[in-house]
Image (cartoon, rainbow, N blue to C red):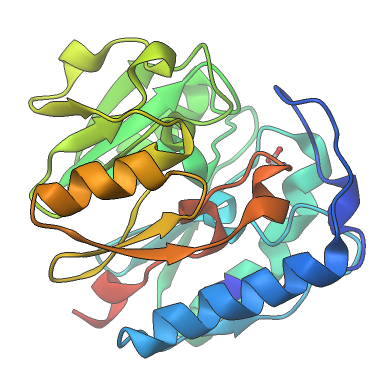
Length: 252
Ligand code: GLY
């Protein structure tokens, strides 16, 4: 599931970076290439209706967490992003998901949830609060998930500085990971943006062009990096995972 950037993209929220001008036309081109790359690796893309008034809506990952057949519609920690969930809720319902919601006072961003098998690591400290963690547990533990809360103090989202390889090894940019020892296997990578990979299937990993050393490291370990340039989204603190939500479990 993906969402085309809207005309106000360049106004996206910045938390940890200085603002630098975003080329919206280039961003659109990069987004089209990202979507085409997913398709060329066997993924069907479902496009959620564009949210014209929401600058950050292209970062669709933050609006929903899917486990089994349940789509938990989040309540983003940034108030300005809350309107983004409406179109996503309609889309996942149309796709046959059972829909659940995070309620006030809970806040949860999908970028804070890293799924490895049946374990959901959830980053607490940035956009996601304790009530959001509790609601994530209540939604998914009855379905067999194990929810593990981990602190996030140095980055916007848990997945800003770590994700996981197909074998479950967590990769992360160590200077920005609060407690790497919380993960059973942790592989440090040399670039912050290299810590984000989207699993395309098999050994293929979708990665940002801004992390060539990490791509080389992962290729040497037998993975196949598939590189996309997402420079305009990186200026807005987004990475490759933020731009899509994988829905495989809905169809399993
Ligand atoms: N610009 C991405 C976010 O703040 O959520």
